[in-house]
View 1 (tube, one colour):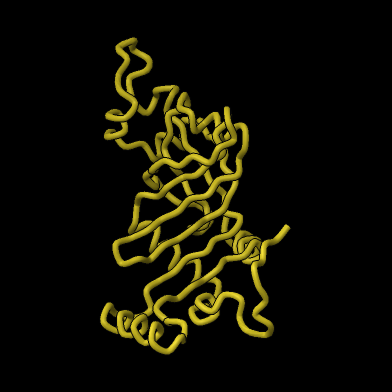
View 2: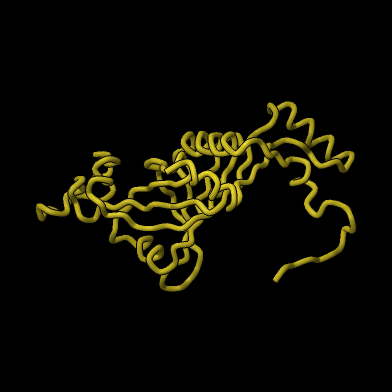
Length: 205
């Protein structure tokens, strides 16, 4: 079911998108996306709340990437609400934003990993500050704490935008657009489609 409030005929339905679309080679798209999200470090993970189906988001620190950069790993407390959300509905979105206005939105399916070797590989002692030590000799916030898990998000698709010009040029573009009605060309707007992801996975494991 789609929504439309008017008809623009043969004109672009989304002039901003048309003016800023950028479609380089797949390797460039993936490499630039990976560089962006690693630099951001913190992203917002959106899930469907298990109890209500409401969309809920929380900030998550990127632990690592897999499959050449397209799959994301995050530490988690396996007893937290977000693991219930993911178990109930694995469809998630991860979004990133930096101070320059560059952003990324990644759609994927999440699973919860409790493999101790994987957890030890990505464990950071600072995680103890988030899980705490319950004083029972078992739930101590260490890499062996059974509450310590990994949320793995396997990408389905992604959209992201990189700044295309410096701040002065972007400002001039926006001012010109406001005067002339010409859409401002200020970003490199890129998409990684499901078919792109499939192609990438064929050569990156």
